[in-house]
Length: 219
Image (cartoon, rainbow, N blue to C red; front, side, top):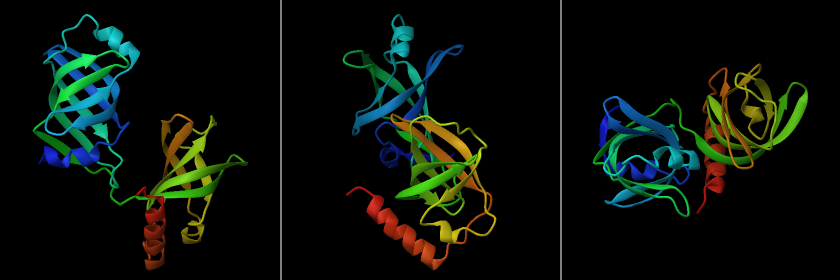
């Protein structure tokens, strides 16, 4: 992944973004965990929140100035992977476990999607195993989409589903939808869906996506 100036890193870092953190205490002494990005003070530090079990694991460790490697998959339209090295300024445990990281000088990024994703906020009907569910589509591209479904449900990776939505008129005949990712969220789950064929980005589809993205994007 090419190195980029840190000024381009901040737009990738959205609140609650899941980050993989690996603390390097020594060549054969590392500790890895998942943390939530909280925010930053420009040109000074980044703040991440870590869970209680990490507090307990690190209580006897000297973490100040330890080197860390950070990785994450962002919510950019092309789903960029980011990675950078930093070091720990310090931690606090009240009212929550917070870790302060020095602002890196450089970072690496790489898009993992080949097609741009458009944010949408569309009610849809999902059909799986003869059962229908009311869900909300959250993004859309010509080769996949993502939707949010409240509560618990039986979906697993590689489950084939059907989707009825305002975009159904753009589906080619015989298209199939497969769940390829599952992300647990506070009130339910977010599902990534892959189409078995790439849609044609017609002028009508692009116009509709732009209109719906405009409505779905917070001001």
